[in-house]
Image 1 (spheres, rainbow, N blue to C red):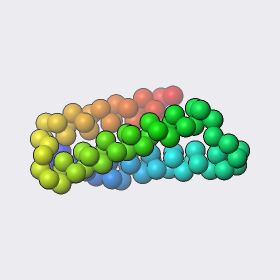
Image 2: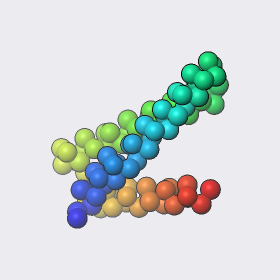
Image 3: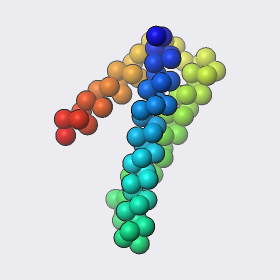
Image 4: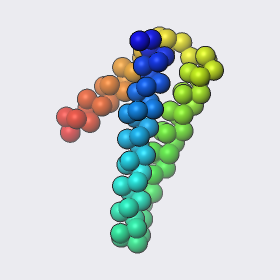
Length: 88
């Protein structure tokens, strides 16, 4: 599998859905508590910005504006972050 296709798969099937799940969790907490903390607001903003960046990468993949080497690097960074999350 090319790094382009692998990155697209990782983003669409793993990373973006995880971000959406986390956003849903935060919004559920806000509804339950009937108030959003500053920490929750900050996390929502960060997650939305990160998701937007990832969607831009997907656009670059679809338009051919990203190289295989760059995809390989991004995949490595994602895997490193995922492994770091598992250790915590």
